[in-house]
Amino acid sequence: MVSLVANGCTDDPPTQSTPTVSAQATSPRPTTPSTTPKPVRLPDDAPSLSDVIPAPATTRAADDDNFALTNQTAISAPGDAEAAGEYLADVLRPATGFPLPVVSESDRADTIRLVLRDDGDPQDESYRLEVARDGVTLSAANPSGLFNGVHTLRQLLPADIERGKTVDREWALAGGVIEDEPRFGYRGAMLDVARHFFGVDVVKRYIDRLAQYKINYLHLHLADDQGWRVEIDGWPRLTEVGARNEVGGGKGGFYTKQQYREIVAYAQSRGVTIVPEIDMPGHTNAALTSYAKLNCDGTAPPPYTDTKVGFSSLCIDKKVTYDFARDVITQVAEMTPGPYLHIGGDEANSTKEADYRTFFDKVLPMVVDAGKRPIGWHEFAKANVPRSGVVQYWRIEAKDGPTQRAADGGRRVLMSPANKTYLDMKYEESNPWGNSWAGAVDVRTAYEWDPTQALAGVGDGEVLGVEAPLWTELVTKEDEIERMTFPRMQAIAEVGWSNSTEWADFRTRLSGQAERMTAQDIAFHRSPDVPWP
Ligand code: TNX
Image (cartoon, rainbow, N blue to C red; front, side):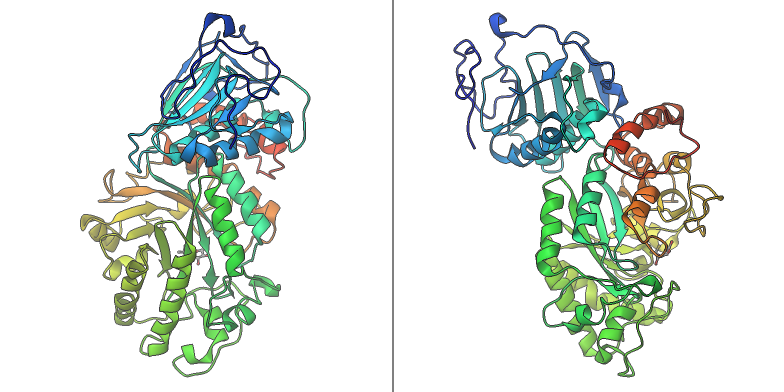
């Protein structure tokens, strides 16, 4: 990485000979009077600090301290700040057309500085963003905090910043300070690539779209009755046979190991962690159809392309079942740097209760041995979930004994109640598309709930966060993914991040996202409960 010190590579007048500042300094802006820029006029369409979604914890506007982004602006991002700096440059370059070099140090005034404080607690996702006319400083304890600050900075620029091609105009950010931190550490979305398969590019775009609202986990549902979607060494028929189907009889597909790693790395470059799910012991017809030996009767069932659930089960008494589970878990864990591996466990209606426990007694230790914290749909709370395990609650009832007991015993709970978070549900009863078993989930419903109040015995200390799953029995194309996800995802993102719950305020801020989503070509649903422009 280059450095832009003492006018190293521009023909602007040199700044006063400010000594080169160390990367770890907290506020390294040169402020000699002769170099302080003139006040910057804010374009009429520039958002204010309080327009951001999810709502920041605190904002303090400084009207005379706007920052102009110009073709001279540099991004300084030393050391471990570099990935967030590169991401910021990626976001800002297309529409501005500015070079925005990412450098290790710069003493120029018009610099956006990403600074890592060296007191970094790895769990600390907070950030401080200070916008002033003589520079922008974003500081955080670790890279995830910097990514959060970058997502905020992006939303402070006019919606034109989201156009994929150069817009010839003035760019400026409203002055002031934002100090911000999340309510929950896990703010997730899930994409079911098993019922319908979606390729690498679609998943990457989904990651981009989610990340801007500070969604930091993407859970991929990689195997179900209708399809197996990731390559596993030693089990070639999973992808030769098990991947060649989807709901409705389409051709399906799968990720090679290299493609899966590419998704993981791409997510990481946006501050998003992938959570892979291999659903067991039910929802396994695709594996059972690939290998006759995985079936108790040694006969492979035909492929399944309908949408019923609960009819398949791995064979609990066969040794090969556990050879299979270990290979899959070990290889998926090896390809996934994040802390979690999701093991499914839902709707195992064809597995006897005792068998279900036997299965997880053998399989959950494999997840732990592979270095991961197991997540399971809340049915798995009936099994012996290790203390590191996470129970993902998906039903609509406000009480669940096993989940409550798991939480009492120290496990964290991930909240995905279907009547608040399920992105496969209709928004309004009248929608021609979408499921409805959990009722319609309009934007207000997705917004007005408290994850620490939704389930008896699962409060502040127990809730890990929130996740919005998109099951894809009825979702076949990318624009349908977008329509089901946005703008409910912004509501869930704010539930996960912010402490604010003012619907009237949220719907106004959300309406301000229309232009941004349009500029990004997101086919969002124009929910009637939002006053769109
Ligand atoms: C229930 S939610 C399921 C999925 C379906 C979904 C449809 C859960 C853990 N299991 O298999 O796709 O309903 O809404």
